[in-house]
Image (cartoon, rainbow, N blue to C red; front, side, top):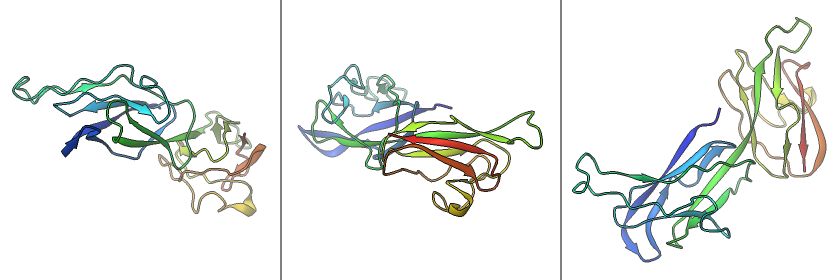
Length: 208
């Protein structure tokens, strides 16, 4: 399920014209379709996060106003936030570098993970898979990060085959947990995989 994720824009002790604040945390890891927004805690300057090499309004449509000081807003000050932005595909481990359109030395990184859900298969016959991978056949780019999220009540262990049980992860994914991030370094029109604990649970990954 998509979440709202905030990134803080915090003022620094010794500002310069090209750097008055920093993005916290950086790098920041989010999931595909999460709603990401920035909160400006700087009482002096506006900010506008943008992808390196992109347009100033590619993510944040308008400059984020400076935070009102406690004197102007006695109840803790008032913090302005950006609009939300989401990502339709994942990133590599290096992530997506970004900067401030107004202050070139303010830099951050977003790392975006794709997700494959492991969902219980209600009403399945005893001979049928008790859980399903969703999507069953996702498409990722070469080196794009993805994880499995176990939404079931039992452990699962995605692997290319029983013989390659530890190719992607060293242990099973417990209920409510996620795998470590995985990436595949070459294109493949269809990588079939199974659950090493329940071999009749299968899926396919396409790498472009």
